[in-house]
Length: 338
Image (cartoon, rainbow, N blue to C red; front, side, top):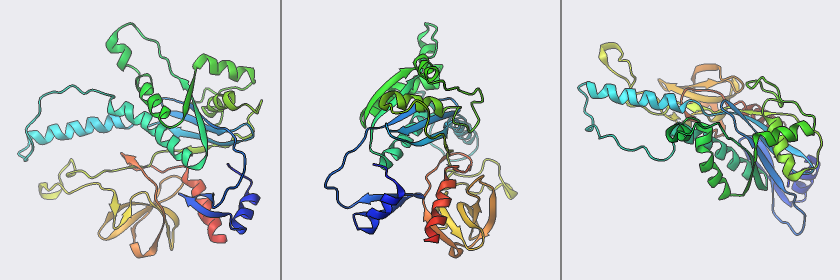
């Protein structure tokens, strides 16, 4: 169970717990446990098309409010992949024979990626908290009575059942419909802003908090409205070559996930630029980017001047910073002070 920092220091000092870090987040792991009482910790999830909210809460405290950017780039990435493959077939390039059209089956890649991102965040939270239940706002979009339209017009509606089945394999699951969430929110006198893209508690986390509070109770008003904003770090995966040829018609290799031994996106400390994360590589040097906004700091950092601190997993696509690393940077600075 989460505890007060003073109690955590006492447990470490007495040898009853050890200090550990997970991508900048400090926690303790107990070496012995003779007794104790655990509380029910619930995760409330408010899905969204662009941003979504997650709240970790018990009857005593609101431990964490997360506002995460939804995965919206996969559809365009798959379209670019198909266009590249189609263009290669028209060139005199060795390639496999075209296959006949086959039924896609299952979920579309873009839809599945949306719900896999929520499942990935949930698994990360399960490593930090003893989560016993998940509650989700059930998405129900208006249908038209046409089978093809009803099953494929909404990416959130289509993939939710797959997500529900995966969650039930981990913990118990409960759902509320949208109008029920609004009724509970109005009963508590909470307002939801219309600025859906704003980094505010009232944008999405107000609903995820209401959902979690409906299960565990304990509060009439949010006891914490602090946000952890999380955005995917999207990497350029390895491609056969660049789409546009260079000088002399040569198409150079492009992309990858390693930069001179460092996994791209890794959190490092540079002797001059301080905390940063690893980008691409060129001519035996690596590029470094700022933790907060992803702005490139340099392109000529020597690997010997870089100290590895932690991994930061990413997704396919263009480079973008993970806003949650701001708290990770503060944790690493605090550790250095000690």
